[in-house]
Image (cartoon, rainbow, N blue to C red; front, top):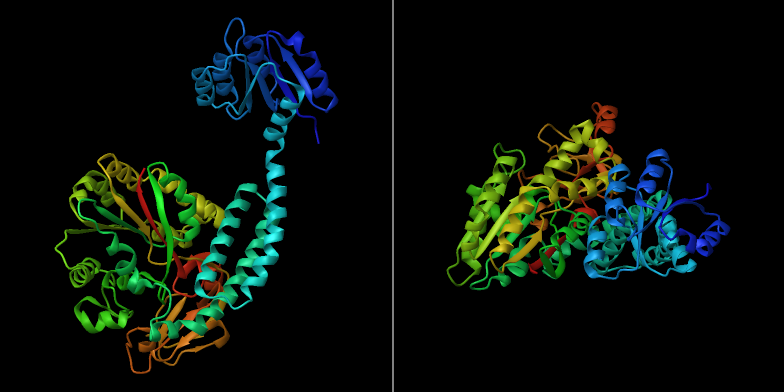
Length: 518
């Protein structure tokens, strides 16, 4: 490894010989100058300095002025400010100018060495520590996923896996990322078995986790409080890992009061899960009670056109007092801008529901557009793209506007998640079979039973029965259904895309987070 090159600018450089000798003995290459002008000339002439040590008080141009000019020439170089002045305003200005660290004179050699290690070696040290910690956790998670977990324990496993995903993202450890991806696959294999064993029992006995049809009843409507508006923000397709990377942005204006989860019903798609959320009913009940607002898969027309009607009906059924309810669905940039402009009007409601479809559109667009496949090439990049969108979105601008006007309860949730699929599974069906890659409903389906949860009586799963012999099948783990026709073409087209509708931790374990104004 080449010696780390340091530029040290200090008008009292002759007094720093002990520190300079110490660094040279440690293998560092140090270039010294006595003023800001010479420091800038060195940086212009040599583009290979790794770090700059900069005295705050020098004749000619000051350290802060030199710092600003250094950042113009080489924005990413770490600069350590060295100062006799402990005044708060000086430090605030230096930190605001993007110094990497600062030291107070007199500095001793060990302080300097620790600073250099932190700046130059922190990434590799962090990577090593993360890898070591995960290797210990790996064995624990492996034992637990095969130990007969209940739903709450599966939620804990999923939270821990996501936590490690984000830590490994930060450490840039490709090897550990590959191992974690394998472990998540193993977890999804065991979770799929768990769902196959328990799902119908939950629906029959009512003893399962909070599911889509109970989300408003148990997590939203109890929050209604006279005088304090409640906003429910439903981000379509939001996974828990995406929530965790968005959370620091939310924390700028809000504080998390409670982070909880619900289990999306099957199929984990908008048509089923989101209608169930707003109706407070399973799809079969919606069809029975509100036939005019329900369409089965193969019927023409929008499948989620009556969410507001279902929401109003549920509120009327469950809330004993008159409340004002607002609903808006954002499906394009124009509507997003309208939301930003009119968000304060919603503060007159007791409950406002905002359905925002961007993340769902992102996952579908990634399938169809090569440029988005490049931009969101893996899970880490997909999370990063989600953050970039949200930080610059009209939605975040709108949310910042509402906290300026007073207290508000904000509930952030979703209808289902999504999984990156990689394993094809062949299905044969007639032309009335649905086209979704993660679930199918149809007659006379032919499929590999080990790849699916099959529901031969849809009513058992709270699902409508389009035909007397209709069967539902749901893909497990990272499987996706393909017909034999043009098999290789569609295999290549859909492999490594984000899909939903089936059984996985990512699709079924959904965040529901209560936040309040800071």
